[in-house]
Length: 109
Image (cartoon, helix red, strand yellow):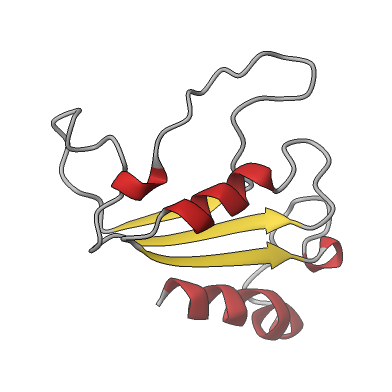
């Protein structure tokens, strides 16, 4: 979203960033950092990170949420018990609709 204009791409209406990270532990960064402050003001940004994520952690997610100052940004730290083994529960499950999907849907509105 921050680089879309420079790449000749249309401005995205929204960005849904789940567990963002730029590298994996022990490997050099493979995805270059981009200034999230360049994300257009009309772009909606939702950033999710896991409170127990030991792979990419929460640093990049928090950085996006903090620096995407022009965009409409929402940051949510997901509890480790909200998602079992990184698999989203089925929408057909009434309990999952209340505890997982309804809060997520509200973020995306």
